[in-house]
Image (cartoon, rainbow, N blue to C red; front, side, top):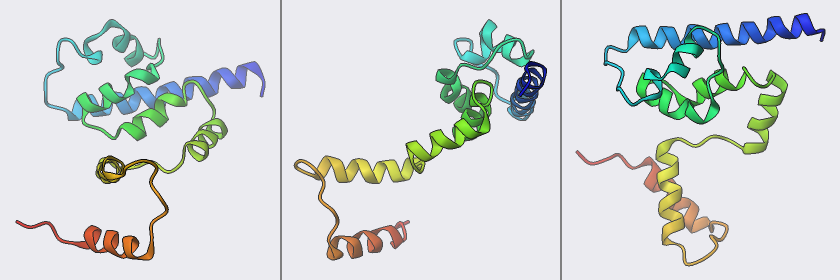
Length: 137
């Protein structure tokens, strides 16, 4: 890819992120907390397309904007990496877990007295039954 094409690609990726952020800000009716990343001079540069959203600030930004952190991370990562690299990261890092799945995994790990063994057929049936159980009201 020539330098000019690469530059245009980076501009388009920045435009995608800026458009998403502005859309989310317009949808959020909560005032921006004074100490948050959204109130920072850096974030204003990001909104103008003059700076990249730091990847380590994505979770905080997503929490304040009430959006999916994974989606925002992907948009922010596109400022630094091409789609092929992002797909490679996703393959190497595995399937993302929901907060609920993370809680299940935490319970399993906190209960185990050492390494967790492969689940037996009984354990698999028990987990399936627990996962399908309706929460009591």
